[in-house]
Image 1 (tube, one colour):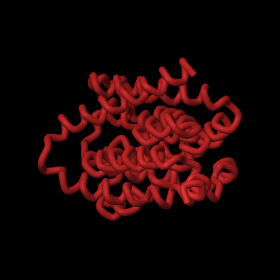
Image 2 (cartoon, rainbow, N blue to C red; image 1 turned 120 degrees about the vertical axis):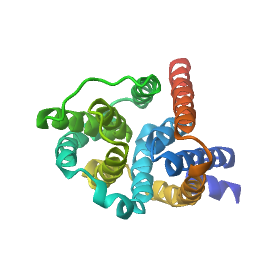
Image 3 (spheres, rainbow, N blue to C red; image 1 turned 180 degrees about the vertical axis):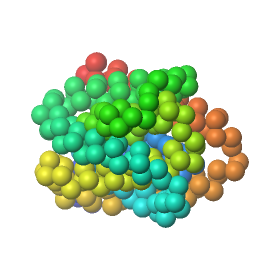
Image 4 (tube, rainbow, N blue to C red; image 1 turned 120 degrees about the horizontal axis):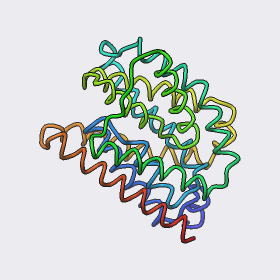
Length: 254
């Protein structure tokens, strides 16, 4: 029975339990703050799975996590900004998926973790990179976001930094981020490069991962009023920093 279980999900029972807990924690943070699900999921699962399996899983889970939020934020989305970001991401995502397919897996682990670590430290320090809301800056941010989203499923991080740099309102930023992540991850799932990475085993594993995803988002949303957003944001960023450092150390030592 245990052998069949391992063969279907490609994970030992202990690793599967770790994955379920990791996704539950990431979903809880997403439900609470609307931030960090893919970065936490990709960084934590990269300890037990190759990036070529982790990234498509994150795409599908992120789409599922975003669907229920879209009706709530639809009226607040800034489509003027979003259209240029999405256009850039559409061009950059196929290039990122090519990197995911061609670059050695340990190298991808290092690259992904370095990006997460850098972005987390910038957000921790509230460092705002000066930027304008010109069409070419939005197109450039979208393109870079698409590349790292295709390669690592963490394309939301540069967009978060962009919204901070132009001092967009929190409601506008949150609504636009929900729509942006939904669009680019849905697009990434259906690209031919991603389709080649999605196996029956991966799909089965992702369906199981929906359980902690939905439970975590529900509990996180219910907990929103009990903790200050800033303290929880610091907790999420601390977790990202620790996980990314763990992946870097593992990739260097192995």
